[in-house]
Length: 160
Image (cartoon, rainbow, N blue to C red):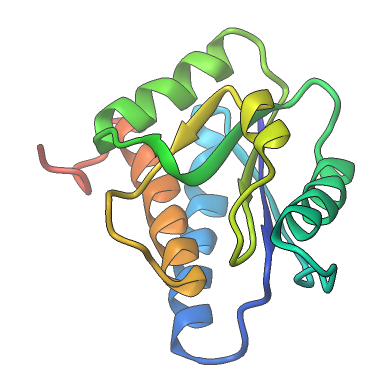
């Protein structure tokens, strides 16, 4: 199964980008052993539409255009479920085992995700009740994807 991240906003050069890339490189190296191929990150500029609703819709259209038609969608959103790492890994493993060929992780812009895109998601995920800057959310996702691979492979990185 091919995993891809589709995000509104760009990570500029610096420590945040380096840390996210470190985890994504680990994911790319370790994932194939458990049937997960990292397909990369697509970044989209924030919409310049006049209202939050129009910005969310515009961003959702651009994000959706990058998602393969039959891909499982995991949306990061503050209204989502707060699950632990083992449950996250189990969900990814179940989608892989059920025959999903692709999985898209979507991260909206400063105004959040369009409700229609959230409704299409197979899982709406939250990293807790706190509000995280976009850069940190990307790092958290990258680390959790790598952690999921280590859990699925039985690697000792995740010590529960």
